[in-house]
Length: 120
Length: 111
Image (cartoon, rainbow over all chains, first blue to last red; front, side, top):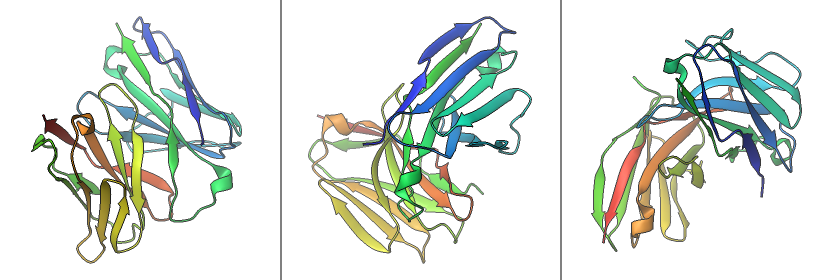
């Protein structure tokens, strides 16, 4: 089945540091990837839609200058948290849609394992 | 109003019983719905998806969709302690091709 690799799985950094998280589709191509954030005991909140070769589409309230998304190839999207602060500490999860799966009603997304960011 | 709403629980069910999880959605244009299971500290994993009115069964799981009532449910038969997790309902926003999640229902199966 489709596999999405996310790295790093866990990162601890000092306030003011920039952190990059990678999301790779291992055995399929993904023109579109999605970045979610999940705070403890809360649901997944969509942050942005990452589009290969074009600018990401950010959800309302998400700062595009703080959460930088680059989708340079059909298998890799990166999320950079610029100048991270403690309030950015969260579980960041990416997901990808297999281009080869088509756009049927079964628009199944494959999720990465998530990256837990802790900003001290 | 949130686009997808769930009762956050917690929901406690004795082992072997049927667990019933419910979800409502506000966008009548939403066509597809997904149930994910998430263990603490882990990423969500897909259990089932449904896009036609009625029931869809897969092993111990049955998803139900009622588009007239804008209601989706997940039934888990013969509940096992390993089913204890948070269950997330998600709807596919028509045209945007993005999933919107409910807040999740925490389910505990008691041995």
